[in-house]
Amino acid sequence: MGTQGPDDDGKAYYSKNGDERTAEEKAIDAWLPITSSRNAKWWYSAFHNVTAMVGAGVLSLPYAMSELGWGPGVSVMIISWIITLYTLWQMVEMHEMVPGKRFDRYHELGQHAFGEKLGLYIVVPQQLIVEVGVDIVYMVTGGKSLKKFHDLVCKDCKSIKLSFFIMIFASVHFVLSHLPNFNSISGVSLAAAVMSLSYSTIAWGASVDKGVQPDVQYGYKATTKIGTVFNFFSALGEVAFAYAGHNVVLEIQATIPSTPEKPSKIAMWRGVVVAYIVVALCYFPVAFIGYWMFGNAVDDNILMSLQNPTWLIAMANMFVVIHVIGSYQIYAMPVFDMIETVLVKKLKFKPTWYLRFISRNFYVAFTMFVGITFPFFGGLLGFFGGFAFAPTTYFLPCIMWLAIYKPKRFSLSWIANWICIVLGVMLMIVAPIGGLRQIIVQAKDYKFYS
Image (tube, rainbow, N blue to C red; front, side):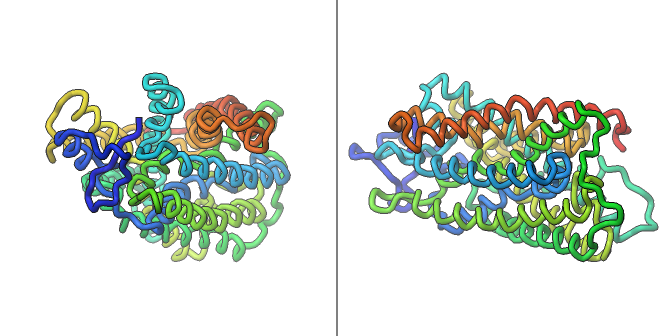
């Protein structure tokens, strides 16, 4: 069921019966990262959502376009933007659907929709796969961008293995991961959001400056029909990966104060609209212009296709590093909350700083190790985008909406939700197949710890 936040400034949204938690439960909620602070403003929602969505995914969009082609690619990009904005609106609305309760975590909403146990079994595995998967991908992205920066500014230097750059990137998180909650990382998130808009602009602006490449080709690069189909499936997952803010939206909304007169959904939705405008300004120019200039020869990271001017591309790669530092923290915070909830509420550990120190360092080390072992950028995006992001982003909110609000059969809401469900299920089935094949192909050409 939904949890009630700590009464830090009298702005918590309580039921008529008041706050019925024990002193111990209040202390635990005040310690856990999601419910420890309720004083966020609407613009916190804006840059948290930008940071959550615009990341590794935007850099792969021209590559996804090369696997989809012009017609399907443009259609998939626009339809995904519309569907995910719609499902995100539904989640914002459902945050306080029960008077006096706030569903501060995705799985709490799932428990209300599907039942205490079933809701956990449906939501928690999917959300963990998304959040841990994103953090692994961002380990790879941060390491690759650091390596690219190094190679550009020091062309005569000895080549350094990617694994070492991933370790350097991870070292930042061994420090930042000990910030207690969402509001404490708001400065990092704001910097990350600014960086996302900056490097996206550099990506498409430098592509325009470079111009359409000689002998550019827009046909599918695969030499066989089956290869083309699998690449198409993987590209659908790469697009789904780009639209990924839903997995932390309830946790972000939990930080906003709420009263019956002024519910948090008003401020949250204002921030979401601003965030989605920024997303459109980042995604569409990068995807369409990047593909237009390079065709099917574009790399799986558009910045890797750009070499000149050297200083600008080096700066863009450093912007990417700063951005994915913030994005990593946004997705790690709900995982920290889950881990610490289990440790304190289930296993009865005391909520201490050293418990947090050990658990969070272990998580950062785990994502670093997996990122070093499997640095297959394009394949990982396609696989995770379909397997995990499609359910939590495209159709799980719609199923919850149908289960809770029960719109009239064949009404506009009913039809819209079922369209999203059908498209999302198809995406969840086909995208991981293409992504897994791409991982296998990339693995054959990869030298361990290269």
